[in-house]
Image (cartoon, rainbow, N blue to C red; front, side, top):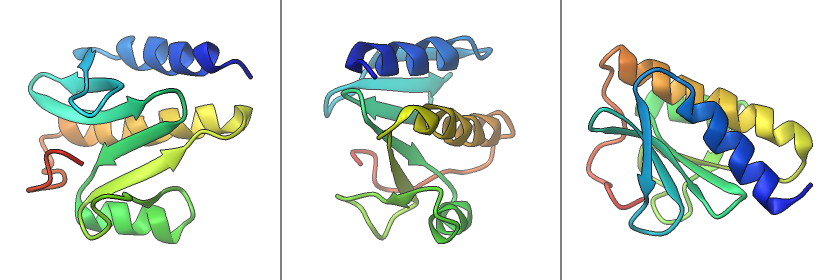
Amino acid sequence: MAVLDVRERIENSVLAWPGVTAAPHPAGGTEFRLERREIGHLHGDRLIDLPLPRKIRDDLIAGGWAEPHAACPDSGWASFYVRAEPDIHRALELLEISYRLARQGRPAARGERNC
């Protein structure tokens, strides 16, 4: 699985969702936004970070869908590592959860903008 293919596939899929834009993330990588709200960011080619309501984040971690964010483990941020081909689909599902929550106006992770 080529590095560029992973990043391109994720970026192309997420940018096809209505209203989503991309910009460089302050910590490196690509940040995806719905209007002014971040729905997640991709560091390099393998790490997705997502701002989520704390309960949803905790449920995803408990279900094995994501991991606590390394730098902000006690926040609403979750992380997901793309390690194999099937993980691309899972990464997109997680980003879509964040996207749908943003479209509904649901609050996401608070106070940890730089996670």
